[in-house]
Image (cartoon, rainbow, N blue to C red; front, top):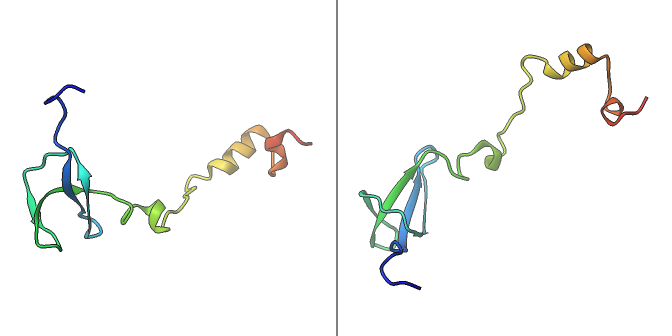
Amino acid sequence: MREGIHPEYRPVVFRDRAAGHAFLTRSTATPEATIEWEDGNVYPVVDVEVSAASHPFWTGTARVLDSEGRVEKFRRRYGRSGAGAARGAK
């Protein structure tokens, strides 16, 4: 492998601003900001808007919204009803 062409791979803290959660991992990201971590060392910090700590899918707060009644509208339009209609059953 050629020397000097790859970015530095180093410890970086990723901080989820929505949940207030932070974790230390390794990355090639080069942020300007730093933070003092739990071990007393200072690491670069990357602020992210969403992580597994705040994303609705991972927190179990995800909701499926059918505010316009799209399923019912489809069934009215094509004259089908029930789950069997989707598989071609009569």
